[in-house]
Image (tube, rainbow, N blue to C red):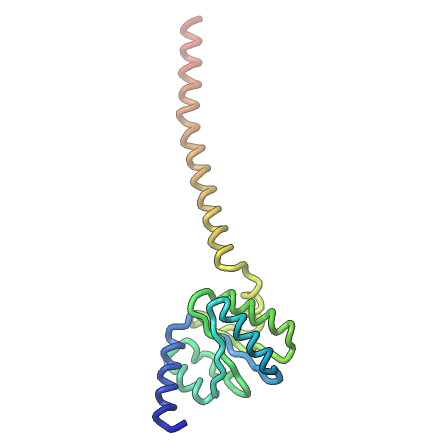
Amino acid sequence: MDKKKKKEFVADFHGLLEKAQGTFLVDYKGLNVEAMNRLRRDLRNVNAELRVVKNRFMKLASQNTDTALMKDTMHGPSAIAITYEDVVAPAKVLVDFAKDFKQLEIKSGQISGKLLDVANINRLAELPSREVLLAQALSAMQGVAGSFVRVLSGVPRKLLYVLKAIENTKQD
């Protein structure tokens, strides 16, 4: 690759890293082509992508992005998983894949400028998916609204009971 193409590649890759909501750095040494293709496919299914990039290019492209936080772990054979939306799903894919293929080592990650170590990535992978979290939040909000309506409807009902009791006492 000549110098001009290298600069273009770094600029393009920098644009991807700027748009990323989260990135995860992994060591893929020892994985065969079939396993790498499976990992790429699994990540693609959750709207993420896996790129194998030279560490020198990755360090240059990550300057002035949140991914620059991971520069200390950019050594050895590295691949980077990039997600533009949900950050939990790619973490789950990587953690599950690392359980099946011991050769895959998760080095570090970042989400919106927060550096994550392997333990935090494992905890992130244990979270429910985005859809489940949204459903739980919606359910909680509906429960509060329903309770509020029941409380408000109780006031006129009790007023009717009081008026009925007053009417009964005046008739006697």
